[in-house]
Image 1 (tube, rainbow, N blue to C red):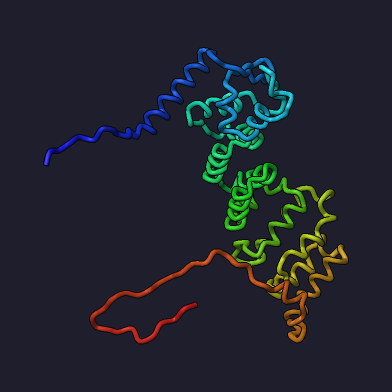
Image 2 (spheres, one colour; image 1 turned 135 degrees about the horizontal axis):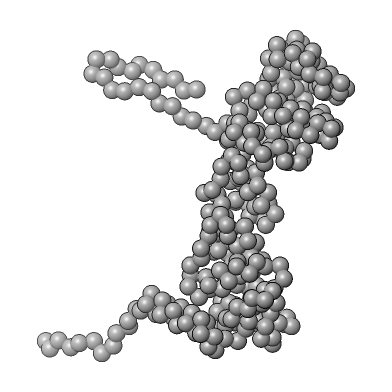
Length: 303
């Protein structure tokens, strides 16, 4: 049988074509060739192509393809976007790369959020999550909440709870609002060895600006699992801490905590159950043992 060669071939050049296309478009942009839009921030002008910007941003698509007045304009002014961030986003549109650092992320993330550049926004959030430490986690949490970055907010909140003993020593901690602090210390996942740590953290926060913050003491104290403190510690607070002793509500909370120890019949009340639920620190599984030819394991225990 005579062998015949195929008369057609479908060449898959997608990767090379995409790379060549981006490089070509970027060269056109850099040389201001065929550009049909100028983005202006202050005195800075950024030349680009509407089709390229619209292809990576629903914001730009609505602006250039919708019924907005900017559709026919050849220049658009931005007043609430950092010029460096806007330049970085335009560069990303033509190259697929974006430079993210501690110096740029605070302006780049809001710009990506406004312009709805999801991939850049996602990378900014991932970068900030990788930078979490006791000194910045509260600030990152606020930043994430401001711009609706839910996953980053959860990651920062989790970090705060897991590293609370270190976080409560930082400057950011003392700058918390009473509402934010109450939300943190109310968290069931707060990782503390004892409730004494929580109390001392609240006390330090109050004393940082005692004249302004003393009025929040009772509200914050209500978030401490007071019945889990020892009788000795509670008694010492009652006798020696004038901030608590001079506040009627605080005295009541301390009395209720002491009742938990001295009047067991009150322990099943709804309020007491809420105040004595344990913190749920990260779970750890420990396995101890080994293999021996001399002995056999007859039982196992799990805690």
